[in-house]
Length: 269
Length: 310
Image 1 (cartoon, rainbow over the protein chains, first blue to last red):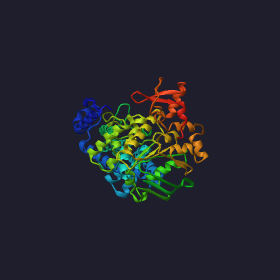
Image 2: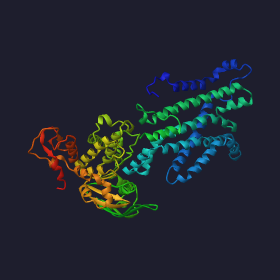
Image 3: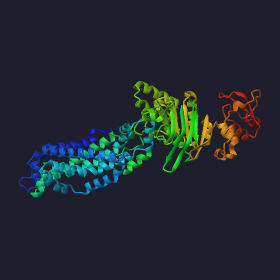
Image 4: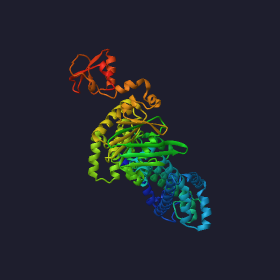
């Protein structure tokens, strides 16, 4: 990506603008939805304001992703250390199960145990988002060139200095790629939190589904989709910023979570 | 400076280093040489505790190395390795400043030191200090690696096959460079290699290892003229001992100063081996010798080359 690109050519600018416009302007689009869905008496979702729903959605995604990042990065870090190496297969299995277990099923199990509200949704979403973060943390830390590690130790870095000055900065772009995947999935999945009484952008979708009101579904889905696009573009920007050393001619920053790019990077120095 | 007392190291059943006693003097350029598996790298890495010895004692500046904090010990020793291991996310200047930064030198002192080292290693600061490692050639990367090892003015420089991965031209340039650095800094250097020519060229003293034991410990001349065993002779290369002896001395040391002759010239700083090669290539018994400015200063005769034991 060219950092000097004009702002009016920037997809992030336009998608963010569109997201804001729809969030605050959806309630003025009554005539449009009437025209699109003439069979509906009330084609505009009005049980909660759209700005409030977007905010609630962002909140639940933010909190559950933060939990997933903290847990996932710590776990990934632990199993790449000397003491935690033996736990790596176990962790990978557990996390993979967390990913295959449908969040709806987690909700079904969690709600009877801890009741309605955001807590079961946060647990389900955090569990579901762990896998890409754990995998990318491990891949990122393993992509650090071994000669750099040997040199760092030989020159007298302590383990902590090694981690903060060498390993984490070099692993960061790969870790961010995993967080990006996790958060994007999370934005879509978070809609199910509305089934257990937490308002999100899933609320109009679920009400629309149960009431056969396609207009509500479109309104919710449109905002969820835009939110995901904006977040994705923002992460792309963040990832490029996290690797200034690759922003030189004949070099390409890591922008996806593919392990191939981490491998390529390993061979570079 | 560094002293090994009956040091041993095993990896499982494999004896890497066996009852090694060795004293490395201040300012000496010591080369540890041997075939792979001889324990030369292990010996080097035991000095900065990247490998912990399990028998005997290793002393640094008079104290057992385990009495130092690992990091403190290593910051007092420079370390350069074959795979270089520059930090890809740091610029050349940041890489060189690694140890000074760990030692919390003031910024101005670090900057001045980095500049000094870039000059010393022949990398103009204006061009190189802000580059990232991947923007350098292999030889330039190893120059930065050596500069990084020298940055905090360590008491000893440890080098593990530092030039092994470089092409012959770059390698020979860096060998000359490190010999010059040794000369001007007077630092003790311990270098591991399996290349006998590199050892003969650089070493004040060669320690030859085989299966974890010292088979010979002496000057390059002693290794060539008084090999302690068949192993040493064959490692040096039986058929090339004479040529390697010639490579130890410069033309200027055998030059006749009174005779000025015509013909293709050779410089006084060339080795006698190069002189022999030039004599043969030119099918002549004598060649004029010139100084670095091209002025004739004498001549070298093929008969003078024979006087090698003197």
